[in-house]
Image (cartoon, rainbow, N blue to C red; front, side, top):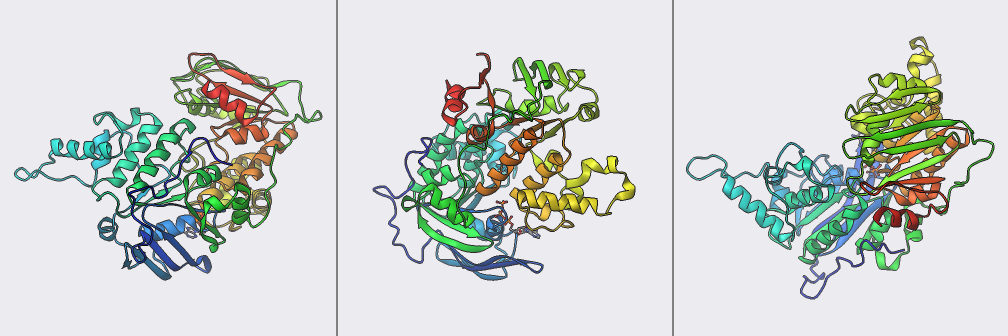
Length: 524
Ligand SMILES: Nc1ncnc2c1ncn2[C@@H]1O[C@H](COP(=O)(O)OP(=O)(O)OP(=O)(O)O)[C@@H](O)[C@H]1O
């Protein structure tokens, strides 16, 4: 399958540097090995990014991708192996000066930007050049340097705008500008670590186009991604990690199908298709579990919902449609909202003053930003999973087995790895943290479950496990709402999908909830 978002590739075009530059690879990793305690998380891994290519690094949650990137960026020290950049060997831990010297830059998942700073400050922070006489920051010069970088990216961004006021697509361009500034065009390598994960779909074509242009200049690009359609349409070659070992090194993407790629990632076939989205007649509850009328916020306009137990409803939309606000409004975290809400037989007028009352009425919200709003990073996995039930069960029973039983159930449902209940959540990979967060709320058996971007950061196999678990919750009689921009997920599991369309009236799809129909309704 080829995504229409990204029709071309970053492969060498006429005039790009030849790829026969052996010894001058943008990045060459050989025999990389890393252990945390007794666990070997990378074992003899090889990876080569050629100048001018887009190379994808993929693998299941916990397969070692972030660890490899963190070794490359100097966060972790390798236990064995060699890293060469532009032909030169770098010692581990890699020093910031070496990263600068070899034009190795990183764009992380959250883009690493500061909302309260202006665009020019975000691009230049850490790079300011003092004026020759006063030694103060020469803002005219800083603006010129930022402008030059945007011009090279063929992008026009208002330099004095507060970053937080920009749409997601422009914020991504600012993050790229920060990574490419100051480098000679065509040198080094830029690593994009799940950078597209939280970007709205409609911003992706521009993002991909910038990546291709950078690659055409001769710079190597390494992307880490769980989006297989993205890998298939954007990358030239792919390296696959499985349990910290190589499952494929530098395979040509043109020679692979998406199904073959997922087989390389999982080591097994992936079941495909719709996950029994038809309503189970035994679980369908005629009473309405969640009713909302006139929900509205800063960008969300008048939304009405009527959801029965046994149903899975999707809510999606593009741009400033208010999708992200739905989480805050339903979760009682927004004071800038209005409307009425009924959960079971309890009625609420928004904004809700007492979040706990919503919870008591049977509504649970799984937040999008798991570390900020959902998990305690330094606390053990078992404590995080069981936290909502500690008060109900009574503190006397802490550590008395039920917590470990629940953790084991979570491991069995979602395949959390490593299955170490007492390890702090911070030591789990991003996808496994997501599975811990989902377990925390699913095991609480809420009457209404609102899951926001539930499959973010999870691998292709875990994605299906999560969607199945949400469906299973509905089949037990619960009402499930999935707020997501992932149309494939919605198409796989939802009975109805509501498409938020500011200024045009929201659309509800019930008969045809295919990915095509959802996309068409979103962008029509
Ligand atoms: N600081 C740490 N201490 C202990 N173990 C760690 C630490 N960081 C990572 N690990 C372990 O190393 C393994 C690889 O994790 P890593 O984050 O590299 O995986 P990943 O492929 O990036 O996963 P994901 O797709 O979920 O982001 C996991 O088992 C993880 O629990």
